Length: 126
Image (cartoon, rainbow, N blue to C red; front, side, top):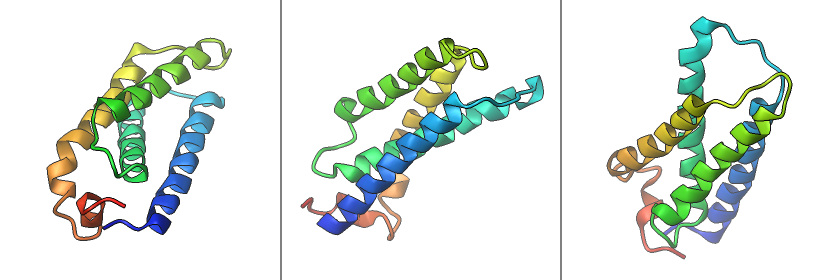
């Protein structure tokens, strides 16, 4: 069983992940064409971690569309904000990378459920 203190810890982590993603996606950076693939991988990893923190922050419900929609909507919101920033741009491929991260989390759930350090999340919820 996941304790209330651990839920609070994951929720604090969720806030940190949301803020970190927002910061890194709205500040100026220099990208080269060679880094474009790594950029999409970064999006996937960030949104996989975001998915994990959302799932662990609200353990009473399964990782379903009720959790997936807000995560993907956050990725779309970031791209819309980037459209208005002079040093950033809107990218559908970034949204694809974000969504790929959510799908990676979803696909990795059977493996994650086997890890002893994470297994408590799927025990009887608080």
